[in-house]
Length: 355
Picture 1 (tube, rainbow, N blue to C red):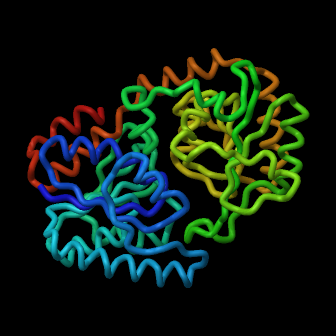
Picture 2: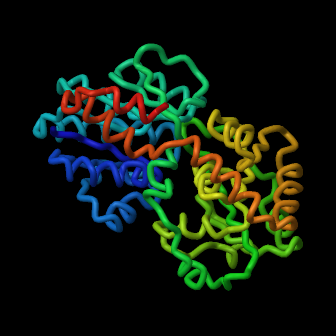
């Protein structure tokens, strides 16, 4: 099989990295193409994934349209030479469009219900759309559900074991209480007009007053008084840090979910709500969603209470319950890509794992 994987966000690198390795070990030819965004190239190089960057970054809807057009045009040119059997992506407008033009099948993975533009551009052209069971929305006969979350493609315990050396790298002692905070840029097509914290400076001060050191990862420039809180560890070490944190507090749903599946209680502060963050709260009590107009104050109250409670055993029990219910999502990626290409005709294996 000849497969193309398209990457447009750092989280996509993590999602596909193990599947790429397994597909290649199964004898398939995998070609990876990316759009430069934040640390995408750095992560691809760190994980020794052969790739080509086809387009740059964007900082507005207008520039996003231009960058996406460039990316799609160049992807089409590469695909015509490769003649892929299948193209896969997260979201994947370019993947689905190019697949149709070159006669390939397309497999889209998605978990973001409010990304209306991406869904309108990608879903009508996709052959298969894979979503977590908690995805809120009717996609029709193309939909394949699985019992997991994107983050379990790379943070399932069969795939990841945190390295305690990260604490020393981050300047921390094993007994230190610390919180990881994520600030978002709000320039994605589905984030524009949304918001999270009212005042990040106040948020940090409240957490520090509760006895926590606050380490910030941010897509936007920080106020001068928060620069000393900025994380300097390499991007590929973030999950190690999240696993040992006492709490995650942030505006990014992906990192909120990453923390949760690692057993770190997560306070998600964003005007947007998602099916998987709701399920992680309602079923497992590992995410606390604050989406309303008073989200800033209420989220800080919850985060402070988590820090002060310091009950690691409770969060570990909740994680164990989650892992008992959910699967290694890399298995779904590999089987679905092989199935749609006609290289793995036994779909019953996928259904059995999803159950």
